[in-house]
Length: 193
Image (cartoon, rainbow, N blue to C red; front, top):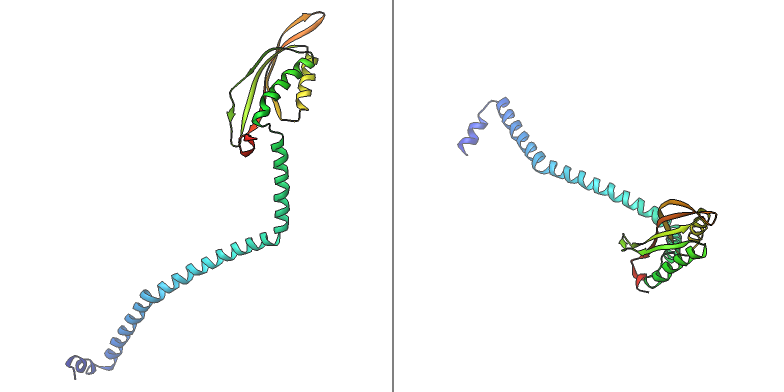
């Protein structure tokens, strides 16, 4: 037999037991750190993946259960978008719209002193189309004009309103009215119509 094995077998029983215990502990420790620990980490990672997949599945199931409601909401939003886009003038309508604003001012008794279209200001999906206005007339005429503008089919905002230069003309108070009329133009596919 091998002399090293004979030497170990010749040791007292408690020393043989101690050697056997150390060898068994080394095998167990090697198995734990080389195999079991890696498998345990893999198991934890897979459990986390499963939990996140279950969360996504539950969310998707809630969406699927309400799919008809979501479709109805989507279709409703599409109708609202079309209505809103209908209030934005197309490229070819801009000159007519601007002319209509000037005509409204004259219809309400205001003198159009200045009517100067300014450069468009692009935004996300639309562009501001501003017009600088200087009008002359009474406060009442200006109010009637602003009311008429608010009732136009297309969106037109009046900004930067300044009233001043009050003077008596033919027994009535006339004002200088400076403001900007801003309409909007859609920059998407409809702009080419």
